[in-house]
Image (tube, rainbow, N blue to C red; front, side, top):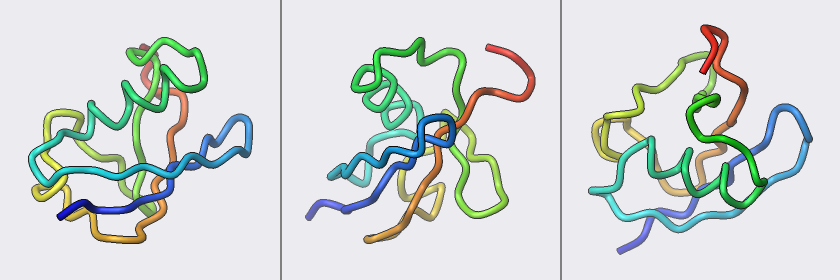
Length: 79
């Protein structure tokens, strides 16, 4: 069963809907969103609420749930 999320681009204000598998990683989200917006995935991070998510965590490890709104933003430490 897929996990449906919205990924908001913090820079553009645009939102992308995604269906995720529990074994996908946070980096998979970054790669897909970056490809959609034609950006370099190495320069971005994902935030859920006030927490930055580890790129290597799976969707399950990051506690991403159905209908969550995630935010993709430029890596504050540089990418």
